[in-house]
Length: 181
Image (cartoon, rainbow, N blue to C red; front, side, top):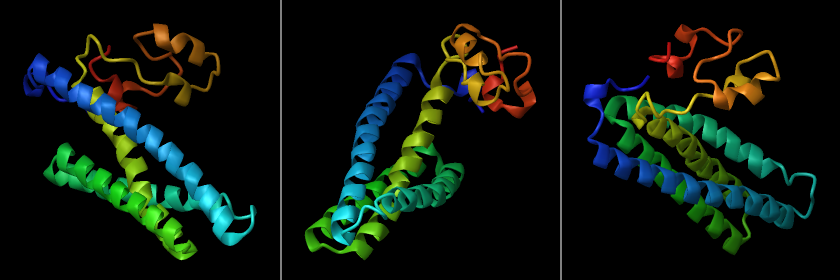
C-alpha cells in the first residue's frame, strides 16, 4: 500500500532514494543473473554432468522464497531499509560462499551458498516495491495488468491506460490500484 502523501519524503530526498533504488536494481539484477549462470556452470563442472545443471537455480529459488518471508517480516517489524539491507547482506554472504565453493571444489558448499544467495534475489524483487511506493500518484506507473487479465491483448493496451481493464481484479484485490479511480 502506498504511503499517504504527508508521509512521503521531500521531493529531493525522494529523488535520491529512487536513484539509490534504481542503481541497486541495475547492479544487483546483473550480478544475480550472472551468479545463477555461474552456479549452473560450477555445478556442471563439479558434478561432471549436465543432468543436474538446473539444480543451482532451483536451490537459489528455494532460498529466495524463504528469504522473501524473512525480509518481509524484518521490513514489517523494523522498516523497509533494515529489511532490504539484511536481505542484500545475506545475498552477499551467499555470493562469497559460491566463490569459496568454487575455490574448494565443494558441491555441497556450492548448493548451500546458492540457497543463501537466493536472499539477494528476493530482496532485489522486494526493493521494487519501495520505489513504487515512493512514486507520486501522478507519476506512478500502472501495474502490469497482463499478469491479472484473462485477455492476452490487455498487455498491448496496459502501458497507455491509467486504469485497469474491466476484466482485471477489482481495486480491493490489488493495493497498487488504490487512489487510481
